[in-house]
Amino acid sequence: MKNTIAIVGRPNVGKSTLFNRLVGQRKAIMDNESGVTRDRHYGYGDWTGKYFTVIDTGGYVHNSEDIFEGEINKQVKLAIEEADVVLFMVDVDSGLHHLDEEFANVLRRYQGKKPMYLVANKADTNVRAHAAGEFYALGIGDGEIFPISSQSGSGTGDLLDAVVSHF
Ligand code: GDP
Ligand code: MG
Image: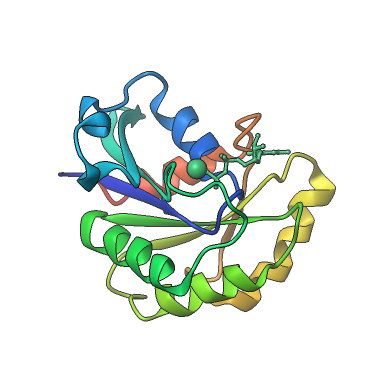
């Protein structure tokens, strides 16, 4: 698929909320087809006239706060294989989490192969947006962090501008 964006990150950071915002109602029918797609969701969106596919990883298989190493490897591998741009999402409300570091450790192996953006979600207020600085330590992306609120949509325009520049 052309122009594909994958959203990865630990559970509860807001991946699905961003996915829903980006795709609106345009979810793929293949969602319900088979076990192959059970752990991820595909949807379609557009921004400034550019069309893209979005993959929401970590779908519905676990609502747990926890996630195993094998699952992290699987999700990252899938994102790298299928996506042109990878969004690594963290949560400024809860702050840096050991699972963010585990995701970053795996993602870093692929850095340079695919554009990666560090997305600091739940930056609902300016104070929270400034708290995003602590995630620089993860060493993902080119030193820029995109603070966004998937809930309100703030910051998502700047993020999409950067993402669709690759399309
Ligand atoms: P996922 O597990 O990464 O897919 O996370 P979800 O999209 O299911 O969101 C987890 C929780 O975070 C839900 O209760 C969301 O309503 C909440 N959430 C998502 N985005 C935001 C945001 O921008 N701000 C706030 N305050 N909460 C958010
Ligand atoms: Mg989800």
